[in-house]
Image (cartoon, rainbow, N blue to C red; front, top):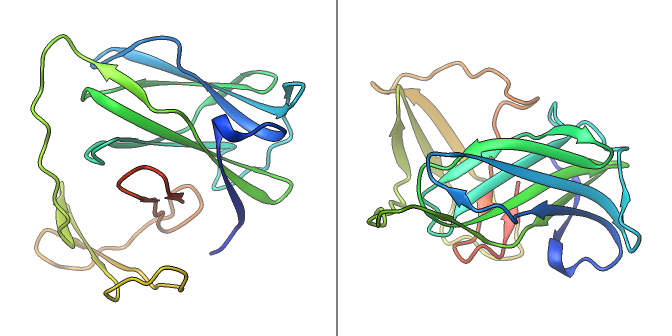
Length: 194
C-alpha cells in the first residue's frame, strides 16, 4: 500500500520536522552501541512527540553497510521528550548509513543520516556481493522477479515468492502490520524507499 511520504537528508534540513542522529560515540564490532535519535522542529529544536503509529511502531530505523552486505531494521524506545534510543550490536566493521522513518499527521518522513564508521582492531576481508534473484535464508528461499529493464519514473511491479528449502510455498504471517516489507537502497546510498 502507498503512503504520502517525503525524503530528507538530515544535514540538509534547515527548518521544519527533522530527526537527528547522535553519532559521537565510537562504534566497535561486537560491543553494544547506542543509537539515539532526536525528533524535533528546526529552527528552535523543539522536541516533537505527536508521532503517528505506523506499522505498529513510532520510529523505524533501517541501516546498511556501504557495500550493502549488512542490513538491520530496529525500533528505538522513547527515553524523553523527542528523544528515542536503541541498542544495536554491529557484527561487521565498515561505513554504515542509517535512515529513520517516522509518520506525523499522516505523512511519512524518511531521514537519511550521515555515514559513520564501525571499527575493529583487526582487518577484515570485504564480502562478495550476490545479486541472485533467488536466495536461501535459513529454512526459507526467497525469490524476486520484476520486468527488465526497470525504467525510471514508471511504476514497477516487484513480485516475491517465499518457499521452504524444498520449494513448497509457505504461509506468511503479518509482521509490523504488513505481510511483507521492502527497502530499496541505491548502491551509492543516495536513494532510500521503504
